Length: 269
Image 1 (tube, helix red, strand yellow):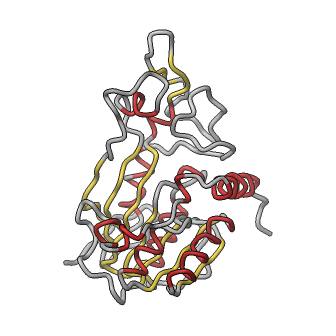
Image 2 (cartoon, rainbow, N blue to C red; image 1 turned 90 degrees about the vertical axis):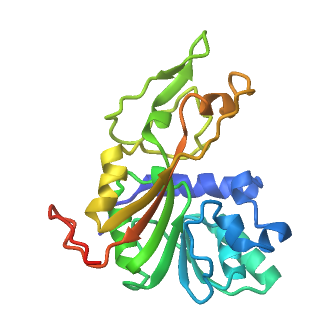
């Protein structure tokens, strides 16, 4: 029997709350964005110019933005998300705009309902911080992504999650150990935390090394700038000038990979 996972219920409730409060994270795609859906999704040119007919998994990406843009671009869209309230926004927007998509309430580290090599693209916004281990997530994505398929993901980078507070001189203090295990404690600094959610710090060896071990090659890596040099202390833009809060990774499923369990992956061009 699967062990109860209270963090799942807590995070489901947190994201249901954000959806019901009309959070910016639950803002559907606009008419303007839909005029150029690929450009709206992809400012860096990571996606193919044409995704029509491709199978796309929007992972932990409900809220009516990514799914609607991919559907508008002609992709066959599946959304997996833990929050039923966020999925309801996708359904509402799909119905309103005449799109068909598959919506599944589930967790990112258990995609048992999806077939192996089913998807051409997996697109995952910031969400890996809500699971204690990255390896099961990467392993499941590698399973459902076809050989040569694209995995685009964004993560909270560990140093940002180590910040606990700001001192009297407006210096940001790393009050959480880089080797912290388990759920992150409640902290005074919540600039890049979601209220009520259980979050976890993942080290670089797990975030980047874990991708390599599960059969991916990293093609690009960026730190989206969220800092504002004019922001006042206490504003998230002020903190973003000190520590980049996010990293975005473009990875591709290797064409041939050995088991991730301690063996080197082999890629045949």
